[in-house]
Length: 128
Image (cartoon, rainbow, N blue to C red; front, side, top):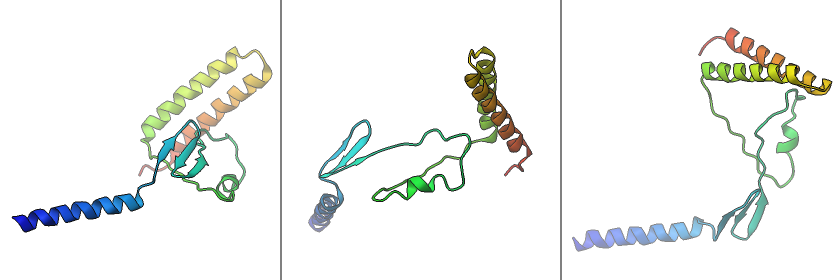
């Protein structure tokens, strides 16, 4: 029994030593920065993509010197996605009808047309 207790204590001490080595001295978050020990970095998030992009547009961001880039996504259900895009199309059509200036009207109409194209592409694609 005593030997088993000593082994558990040794394992706990080894785990503590390992955590002390791999755990940063301090971790701090603010609005757009992250502090990790003595190092500080800026944090930016891309949450909305442009409607029309050139080929390799993201490579200009990912190839900036001294940066770390993480790209993540979550798969979604096609039905939920189509419903969300459909609501967006309806909203954009309403904005286009109520727009007072031509630029806002054109942008809203273009967004609605793009949404309708995406819905058609999703409907035509084979279901996996």
